Image 1: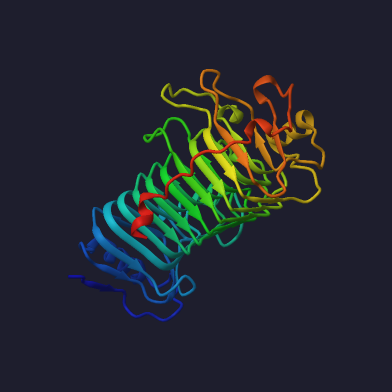
Image 2: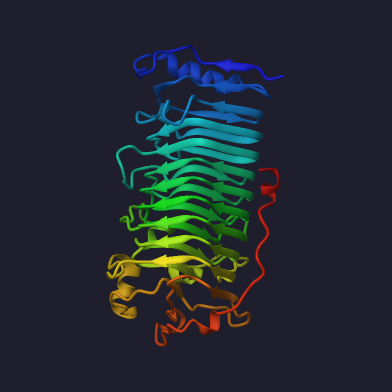
Length: 393
């Protein structure tokens, strides 16, 4: 039977000067039992320490609405995350906003069955390298549902799912982040009906080395509106997303079995869709089990559009566009870096896209034989199956 946990009925806006608020909220999280509902009233709560839930099952953490219950961590002095949930199962977080955390907004780790509904994670002062890395951040989780959520201002990724499996991200909005939505080293994900706008990169599908879960894939990205992702990159120095050029719609790096279809990929000035190996990052690879090439990539039935302007001139990628690619204002919508496994040719299919243009930039050979002919990629791949989580949702 569910036991209802209630914060005291406080006035709608409460200041951090009332020291009992922090203690009461922490007590709810620490003392929660399996099956509890942690019910947070309407209000603006100024907190200075993380709220942590560990080893619990069948818990609901709920506010009164994304625009009604605010947990603000601008004065945070302890912990990094706003809310952290670890080592549990069947956890739901819904109807609240987490703001201005020192580190990540809401992090869940090693949770089987995690749901985010009507949740917002944001940094209210806008883009800054001092903002936390991730807004909504499930890692090493399974059966992950993120729906009707928002993320703004993350210095890495607004909505990030890492080293997880069986994933749905839908009906969300990500804006003013470095990466809007990122799926990293994860298996069986459906990313659909989202809006990614005014990020550096809209949607990223990456496999990276040196992680516990080595290989991701079987990712479907469809029915999304990925537009105007031309925000300056404000990632802290050394972050891999710091190499994503502004003006990137969708980027697929070093992963396999990705299907991108029925998306509107509009006015991303540098590349609508990029298919690249990890070598394009210029970072060394020390992980002997890591496979750095993309393969089984299927891009079809998308709509592309961009303004008649030059791609970014900033950063290493900007230098590449300026000095090597020399596309001028005629920038192709789809770019393949041309770095391929010599023993296993990549399977990349590009077909039936509206207003599509293409280039293989031949980065493997110092850009000597750039080709804008997509004929070799006019093929089909079998459609991927929905995420296993789709059957239950």
